[in-house]
Image 1 (cartoon, helix red, strand yellow):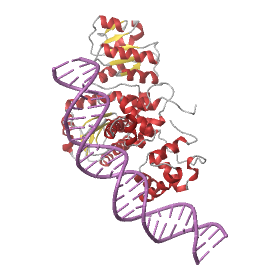
Image 2 (image 1 turned 30 degrees about the vertical axis):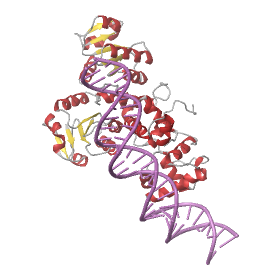
Image 3 (image 1 turned 180 degrees about the vertical axis):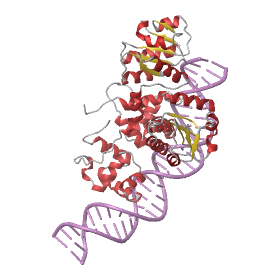
Image 4 (image 1 turned 60 degrees about the vertical axis):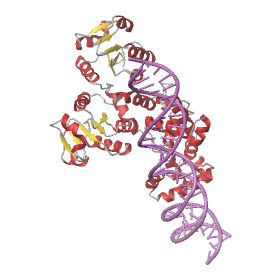
Length: 209
Length: 209
DNA sequence: CGCCACCCTGTCCACCGGTCCAATATCCCG
DNA sequence: CGGGATATTGGACCGGTGGACAGGGTGGCG
């Protein structure tokens, strides 16, 4: 267990959690001291996201195979993502309770990934913000189509297969193909992909999370 | 500790890892039995990604607050993404060594997230693409792909067929298929239409502020 | 009543798209 | 040097897709 922090007092909880842990003032010092550790904890106090990400990347290459946990003074989701993307295995508040730090160490030591509970929620729930238009924004590429053709085109533009569109509209797959063929003809496209592109590019408003 | 699996022999390692764990044949059985568990392990053996994702989502709502771990017979990145997006806290091979399973349980029990080490980077890249529309200039849907996969994906996102993409990149149609299949897997999409949607929605340039 | 537009369905078939089984060559890294 | 990632290609397989050939039903309009 080794931590890197310019001033020892910045990571008081960590010292309390791991009394036997060693500490370096910088990554270079740790490398010079050949600090062999099972885990490396980085204090990224004043660094912005980008610098923190780079620091993590350097640490990863300097200590290959050693899991890295980043401690921030002001945790932010963007910073957490950068840190994890850089190769960190954990991200937490530098002033977390020693018990929590030990718990994080446990998770990371066993190959797990530690991200803040609020970030966890975003990760796990990100897909729930699915787009489900179902609106009727007239005046775009769909204006020349009949209502049913438009409905089918919208389903396809969401990525649906013929079978799925059929189920969604409660009609036969054959009928979907008929409406689709008509839409192809009217819009001058050759397949569902071009239709989807046409529809989505001409959509007046987009409700993306 | 509770597992859901149609046939007990499919999850022999799990039974060895948790001799005291209970087991149900289906999610409905588990609900009916009011199986109160600290963790719920789902065997998603023969299910495809989508059904597995839905199963996880149902399990999450049926057992709110209970961490879910998905065991797959043939782990794939796309399936892992679907499972995690559905709310799973872990994803692993159903035939993993009991020691590894116990390790995973430990991580999950302490609030961690378990994904295969090789999957970690990609998942984070995908999460990156989903979460930030303004912070990271780099990191759209293409970020996790290799240069050639990215090139093929861009051609397809423009509406090109395999043959056209092949001609544009001066490679065989067969190779286009290979790169596309890899891109599908990494992005967690099933066909070129969903890939095009994903790519175009995460494009760096957006007309709306 | 005919005509027409729209909606729905059926069958047959060629082609494309996606996946599974490979193999080969290069390059970089530990 | 061996292992891993990347790029490239081959063949076979099969389901989805799109086009072509059909129809039948409804409602409006001259």
